[in-house]
Length: 172
Image (cartoon, rainbow, N blue to C red; front, side):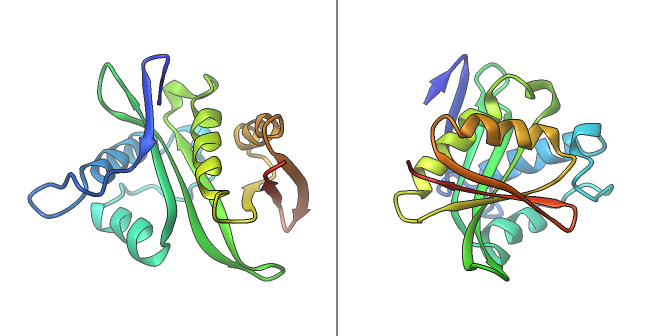
């Protein structure tokens, strides 16, 4: 999907570099490293740059993706946002699908995160009953995204516990 000169699509696992690393993951790593240290990304407790092996393990091995979508700026061809729905074990609900999203600071507040989240949730809700969103209670950007998702999906929450908010997103 293309909207306002931004392409939204699933990560391609076919286009790889000489080491066999998907090009989309390398571009995602570059975006994550460019975002480190920005005040809106303070919820990622990290200072050192991401290595590609970490990105590859995160999305391919340790946290198998149900879906991984990216947003690409048509002009620069850079990844400007990434969202991932993976598997986790929740004490209360057992095995769940959970959403994470990161948007480059230059594109925050422009609807990129909401559009990307809507597309990936739509994709995953074809096979899953719900998608869970866990966020720091102070993460206003994520709370705004969840509020906007409520116009398209049934959203339960926030349920606040241990300084974090939990939302459950389902089809209407």
